[in-house]
Every structure is written in structure tokens, then in C-alpha cells.
Length: 256
Image 1 (cartoon, rainbow, N blue to C red):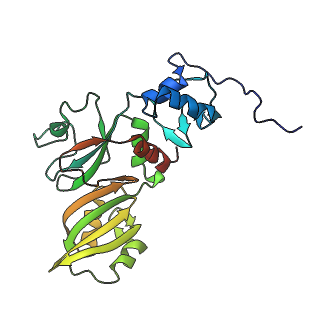
Image 2: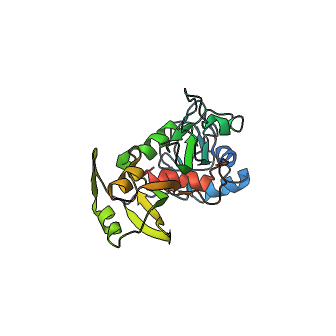
Image 3: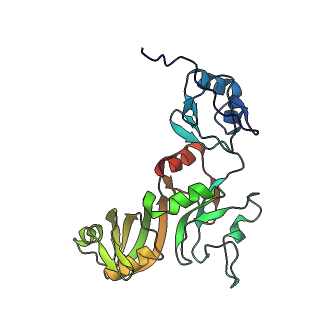
């Protein structure tokens, strides 16, 4: 006998902190409660893999909610922030040597305590992600998820034509081989060149060590993207909260 997809399904577990699903969606910025009710009615919302129904409840801290197939972070206690880290700032919240640190820029802008996702050395600048979502942060940093990062580097030139092939084929460093996922020359000025590198490696000083190994040491390094998140026109030293769509894209990048 053919199963009727419209037949009642077993009730999903309801946790102590559960609220009406449309209220959870509205609090997460999806839309008004009425608009969220319409999404649920049109079967565009799932909770823990189950198509939601009007009257369902959800716990934003425990349940996995998708809207139109995109993961929604409904727990309003979690924050996701992009920062354009300036050169000369160390990637730490408390530097024992008294150097300029991330906390000097965050200050009272965020009520929650956040942590940086990965690092940028003091001489490097550009995109840094800050969050209190430890699970997502771990996945973004873990090499097995292969989240791509793109850098704009100012290096010693001129750049030989075969450098891109050499970098994508792989270069041996003292702690093992590394290869880039993409490489291109952006521009040249005298004996200096600007190049763009994309790689999923996260080892310490990996771009600087890689370019030095192939004879083109880096004089300036800017990270321009982490997975789907772009630095864009975010000014140096400024922070901005990620949109719901950007957070969903980060979850998608790690397979959630």
C-alpha cells in the first residue's frame, strides 16, 4: 500500500524551552508571525528534518530548523560577526605583552563574549569572523571541511607564467606539502605584484611561508573571504553582524 505523505507523522519531541514555531522564526528575523505561519502552512519549514505543521513548537537552542532548505540559526543568543582586522593587531582577546588586540576594537559593541575563527598574524589584515557558536567555529577551522579562504598578497615580482601551475600542483614545506585551490595575478607595479590565492589550508603563516618558498616573499597580506563571507567594503577596524543568509551559507559550507 502506497504511503500517503499527508498522513499524520509521529510528534517531534518538545523540549522545555520550546515555543510556537512561528514565534521562533519571527524572533530570528524571518518575518512577521503571520508571514512565518504562511511559510509553515506551505510546508517550507522543517524542524529536525521533519516538515513542520501549524501548531508545532521548537526550541531555538536545540532544534535544527531549515527554511526553504537553508539552515536557520534561531538561537538569538548566538552572534556572528565579520571584522576587518587592521595591520598591527594581534588576534587575541587578552595579549600578555600589552599589544593592540581584538578586545580594543570590540569593547562594548558586543554584549556576548565571542571568539575568533582562526587567526591572522599581527602583520596581516582583513576578514576575521567572530562568534560564540563553538560548534560552527570548530567546523570552519577544521581542515576536513575544506572551507576556502582567499587572500590578496603583495609580493616581490616579477611573477613567472608557470607560478600558478606550480602552486596548484603543490609545494613542499617543512611541515608537509601545500597547494592552492586557485591563483591569479591581479596586477603589477615595478618590481611588486599583487596576487590572489585561494586555499583551504589553515596552518600558521601558510601563505607567507608558501610564497617565500617559491621566491616571492609577501610584503602585505589581506584576507578577503572565508567561505561564502566576503570582506567587501567593510572599513578597517569595523565590525558588522552577518545576515541570516550569510549565517545559513556558513552552515551550508560545512555541510549542515
